Amino acid sequence: MNLASWLILALIIAAVILDIRYLLKNGVDSCSGSCSSCGGSCKWAHDIEKARRSIQRKKKIKAFLHLD
Image 1 (tube, rainbow, N blue to C red):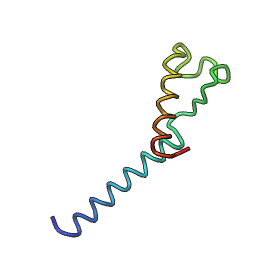
Image 2: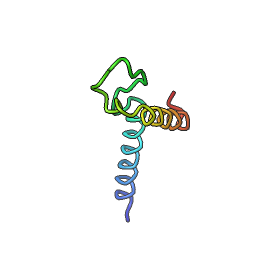
Image 3: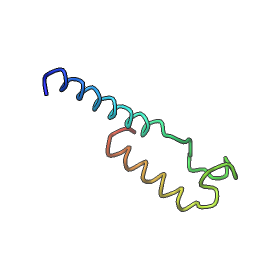
Image 4: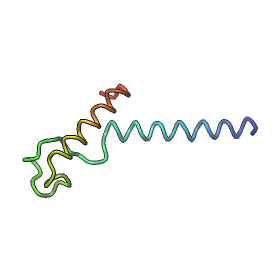
């Protein structure tokens, strides 16, 4: 691999890291954890415990990556 290949690889890795950071910061969905606010339209409507685990997992990842 030459210098140009390494630079392109570094740019791709940086783009992926920034994309993951953006998704963790802004989220894919807008679940706030308040199940009464969205009613039956929420994908977690019938499984509140799964929703709580998902929110806790996202909070741990954000805390680990210092995205608070």
